[in-house]
Image (tube, rainbow, N blue to C red; front, side, top):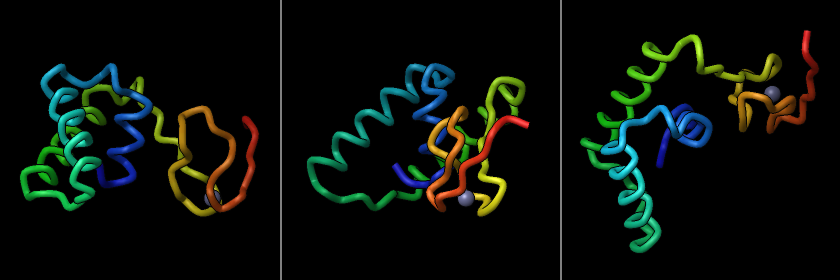
Length: 92
Ligand SMILES: [Zn+2]
């Protein structure tokens, strides 16, 4: 949908979402593709913020936010060892 953190969480931790949240996200993505309109309503923004803060506080021992040590951007997955900036890193 929108923010990088939200995309990262729903892609990598989809199973941590509640069914109603999953259903809303699926229907939103479908309608975005159909209409080619990717603007978010105020509801969507609040919805995303709520999910982000709930997941990060409830599952802080499970969720790994994999930030690139060089540019600080989120990698695509928790196990990725490279970022869009081109930096590649290895386990410390
Ligand atoms: Zn980077």
